[in-house]
Image 1 (spheres, one colour):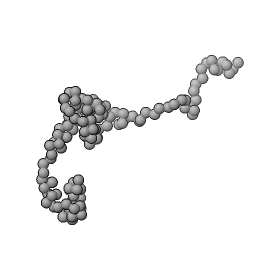
Image 2: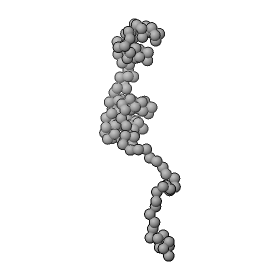
Image 3: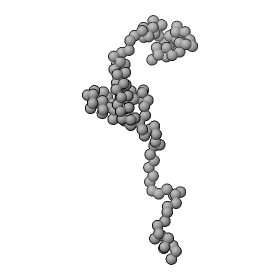
Image 4: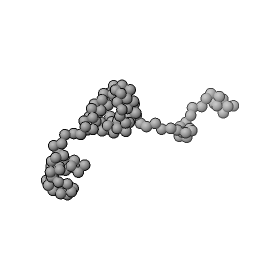
Length: 128
């Protein structure tokens, strides 16, 4: 995390100064920079590609639980639901409910501000 911070801020300050302030070495930063992505990061990238395919095939409706089920059913992948949720959050697609509709509101009882139309029987009782 410290090396990533140095990488983002090196345009404003020198690497030496940032490394000293964060308590790491310059050599450690440069070794981190040259290091290839880990096996887990590479697997995450492959999963992101497959998650994107599944999400697009569902026309943007499926969220993490359904994408997880599709990964397990179609591909036979044993991936945790939390990992799928994290990767979906990184990709930032939204399900249809979140993107296009307001959240549902549940009304208990009648809305007092709304006038209800009267039935013909009520009109006859009041008139007579």
